[in-house]
Amino acid sequence: MRHVLLLSTYDLGHQPFALGSAAAWLTEAGCAVTCRDLAVGTVSDEELAAADLIGLYLPMHTATRLALPLLARCRQAASGADVVCFGLYAPLNAEMLRRNGAGHILGGEFEAALTELALTGLPRDSGGAPRGGMAAQPAPGDIPRLRLKVPQREGLPPLGDYAQLDCGQGDLRAAGYTEASRGCKHLCRHCPIVPVYQGAFRVVPREVVLADIRQQVAAGARHITFGDPDFFNGPRHGLDIVRSLHAEFPEITYDVTIKVEHLLRHREHLPTLRETGCLTVTSAVEAFDERTLARLNKGHTAAQAAEAVALCDAAGLTLVPTFVAFTPWTTRESYLDFLRSVLALGLVDRVAPVQYALRLLITAQSPLLDLADVQAVTGPFDETQLVHPWRHPDAGMDRLAERVMGIVQAGLNGGESRRAIFRQVAAAAEGVAGAGPPGLDLAVLQGQERFVPHLTEDWYC
Image (cartoon, rainbow, N blue to C red; front, side, top):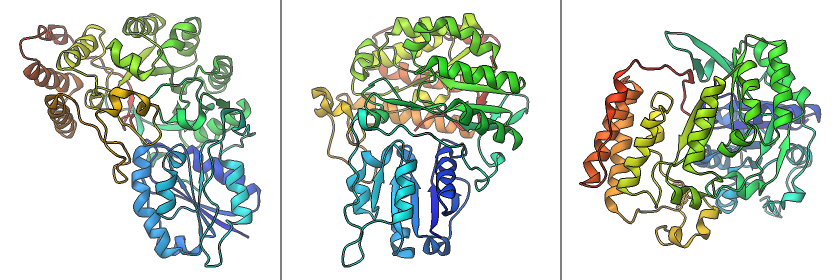
């Protein structure tokens, strides 16, 4: 019997769906599977050495950076094991991962290929080293259509080890996580999904999603995060699932992620989300600056983002925006305008403070690298940071980004409110804006703060 060790380094504070999904496939194929989530636990050198195949799950930037020292451990402690990296960031960083010890690379829809590799092993040269292990990323029409299985979660850490839903006044609720679809129809330039799925998306069967939710509720979950890049890529599929979820578990709440343009296009379905227990809708607004939105190929305007906020408010939903606050196109004036829009739209209580500080990540294979003005400010790929580093044409903006991140970190460490942190960020922005636009009118923050239920780990890569 082949022994497979599946490892996750970090997955945004939730129990890794991908490890459970892979474990289900591998166990059904007759493999012995061990799962270790290093975000909440450890793996021993003895466990590494005992594995025939080690699979490292790399869904995001932070997870991939954390995996590099783990690859070095695998080389030392498990020199005879096949090492496979899988997930969105694996094909983006394939060459670098291969040099660091990965024998094979898998991107999206990895379960069947990972199972085949576990059963057959990687081909090796006469010296015992893996050969031919660099998987080419398939074209959109060639991305597999898998019939996914119900994730096997028994070997994963309990839900209590992960981010909880904070409902205020000490009410913390165990949160589960599942996926109703993977990939995305859209081609936002800064999104790591695009180079892998290239505009394709795949649905997870309705019965699989509901069975996965059912087992997490049995394990104590009182809230479910749907991790789909866009829950309305297939609106009928998503709505069928949440209707069934609510019918079976009317007390369970959930959150979803939906693009601005889909909120507008499918506005008639927003009341259904509220009626079935949706607490918040995360939407990647990214900016209120039209130039930045165009460069990122977001597919919406600032006015449409404001309309999406109003539509969600009218439907009784809370839209929680995310932003890329600092980009090569952000100016002192536009950053102040960004804060002004957050204030005017009543978003201060909804925005996780780290969103005011996030800086554009230009990853390997990013479509952003096709833009001349991005090429002008970026350097060669940094294999330590896993990005193309860039400097703003206005050095003062880089200093402001550092200042804002310092404010946010100190505020969060000190337990300050979102409004208090916003005031400090606004003061820093006004300090560098000079005599340009008028300052922010913070008088609207004098009213009672609104508590927005949120996970105890901020959502970002």
